[in-house]
Length: 385
Ligand SMILES: *Cc1c(COP(=O)(O)O)cnc(C)c1O
Image (cartoon, rainbow, N blue to C red; front, side, top):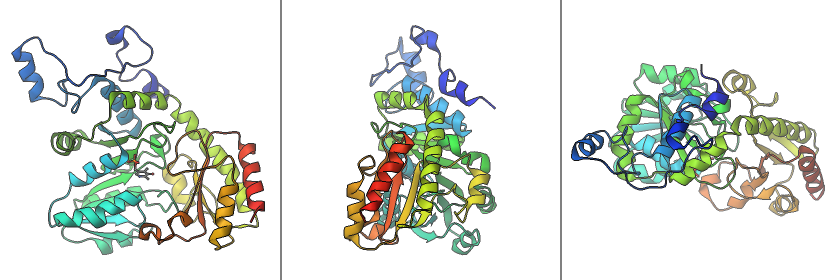
């Protein structure tokens, strides 16, 4: 296996092509020129492997996609303008009118919107299931099921699926498996090694890692990547810009270090919060108290920076007081950057997308700050309720 440090640094790069620069280049161009018609003709015939036009292929993107494929243990990777572009391309490429998708409960909100509101317009049905029990996949399977969509863990309450078992079940029934691996990043979990067909990421989160880029990744085998490239990728045009791809290349250089630090700080927060009298329950997949801790240990290297807590009050005013009192956890959506964040379910009082989650659930994101600063902040804010 190729060493992670080697992948992040030299792998997929040919520095002699760009003046031996240590940092990869940003090739900010829309198109590429050719010496003669013969060359142009050959390139257009194989846009995936040639540089013709940057909606298809670009040298900065190629460097990044080689590294990401290697980190995920995939044959190839496509890069997108957002995680949702990667997710919608992955799903649309593998489903037709009259077919059916099995999806785990509580996927990312806009993934849920895609299944519930957009795909039915094209005759695609879905069933949401509790993916913690393999038997539920079997119960939900129909003759026309073509996709099993996983998110393990999900990003609010962290339910997981046994990836090897689901992959085995899906292969038996010729169903394509897709997983949203954003929570773990390729450092903590590599689903393709468990037999999953397609891995998607919101690279906006850990891969970018600096809260300054929206981006997406789709990893799979060569045949699948070619199919997506020649259809959805080229027609929907949800491509990442070279500069944003370069920001991800920069983010990759510290990804393993950052993941280690997020895991350590989150663990310290979990230990503190589990003992706190104003917290009823802590949700963190790598905590011994988590019902699927053994599965987490089996398929994930370590936990991430996200965790959730149930406060011991359902009084929205008090929950707001706690969130507003935090000084170093900033009130914001998303996660994966330097900054610690807080995002409470009570933001969505009249939003059916979050109606399944308890009102007193508050999501915290352990950033890269000094952990004592964060513990002190939680201590003072919990005192206010
Ligand atoms: C943010 C997020 C997405 C969507 O990614 P974008 O880059 O915002 O389009 C998908 N899945 C999960 C789990 C996310 O957190």
